[in-house]
Length: 199
Length: 199
DNA sequence: GTCTATAGGTGGATAGAC
DNA sequence: GTCTATCCACCTATAGAC
Image (tube, rainbow over all chains, first blue to last red; front, top):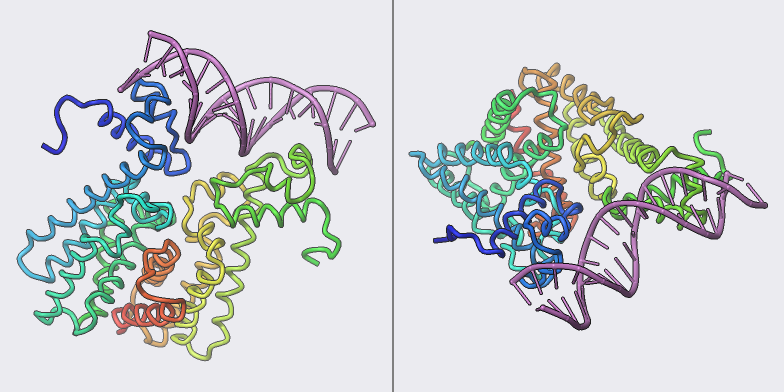
């Protein structure tokens, strides 16, 4: 019910806009290109969105939804520490499998993302980040990791996995090897951090 | 001897180009703006550089020099683990005190940085990264951290501090507080990782 | 809702005079 | 070396006809 089968112009506009955005990033995003692909004139876009920013912010929300979808799958695991580990792994998978979405969400200025728009604010205050905090909290409760400020530890973990993911996407970790090798390295790396977080 | 006192046009061009680049990033970098600030016509720029890319790549090398300057100061510390810790702290300081340089070096696509230019390739293969590897290696030698592949551990540490720095610069860690608070958080965070790396 | 036409702006790069 | 003049491409946004 979220999207109807027969796509109206607004929906198609949104789809192509997402393509354009994810292909070239914020700087190469243009109304004209979106209009071209959608098959309407650039002027017609203004019947559906206020301006460039309006269309842009609508696009950004989408990647965030996809990201949430990845993380939530961690709940399938049986124990708190398994769920935390799975969340880390799914974070990596989202980054590798949706590199452009990842860039949009995490590698763009928080300011550029949504200035007064309807965006889910910054990741740090989103329900998705709260999800990570919850995973940390339950790990603390069962003594899987040392007592401490769950939010601070969550930020700590987030920064670590983001560092790995963003360096990878920037091409700075090409020396690690292919995606499978990166997956192994990612696991080793996060395990080292978890070791530091252990009681 | 590296730069003469009386700046020739090429040098002034380079200085203003650096300003423009660091203010707006790669996407807002324009020859015309650089020429405007330097006080010459846009066309004249082509007497000094082949094209936009030529000027751009010349600019990028500079920030890297500054970065190296920061890290090297870690050598003043007495022990390997102190030097490693200091390197981490100086990494943070470089990022906070030269945010735009940091973005250029570490938050830009490796491809966009220098395609066939005279750039020091990617950070991962640079002498500066080798510096970190050396710090790790000497820590392993004195058993300050557990035995292991020094390069892999160095990448691990790099990703961690980069994650913290880049999230900070993107505005995603504003909840942490001011720069002093971030410095404390940074230290706590890296100490946790070092704990995980301990023998 | 969509179009064409248009206004007014950015930019990169070149030609040719001086 | 530097200039002006120019060309061409791209863009956002609006006005008004249909």
